[in-house]
Image (cartoon, rainbow, N blue to C red; front, top):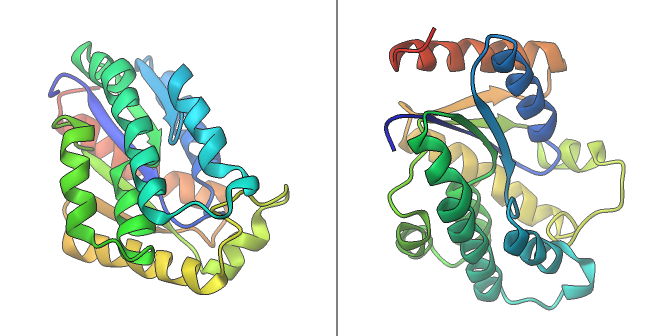
Length: 210
């Protein structure tokens, strides 16, 4: 997978992943980079069907184990159908969420255990790993307040769950400081973008891109 560059934006709900992914894509495209923007869950015909199941408030009774396997199934399809081919052709892939989300949401906050999720993720991800993960950090309550539409099934979980999610992301960053970067998401959109752009630019330069 070393021909392309894989960048993941992750963090608690309401942290601004989509906005920042779109800004980063626009910045890179303006510099003639071949960029692909994807999201999880989803990103494929099959994955979007799983997204509908996972995020629908109608499925509030879903077990965390079932939740995990649906996320992994969607991820496996996305890796096989989209991410691997894109990286092999040298694209810069920017993804909203990846395995880091399952480790935090189902493994840490959901109680399934970090190692169990990592083990399942090895098969689903087929050796694909992000070059960098940007964690957009925000207080749980503040992030949820930012969401102006109706809350989906995951967003509707209790505040204590979302607080565990935030702590989980921060713990991941402490464990992997070299490729997990925490960005304070409470600032302005432009301030956050400039920080991400700075880190991403250095990464692209290291991998021989202009």
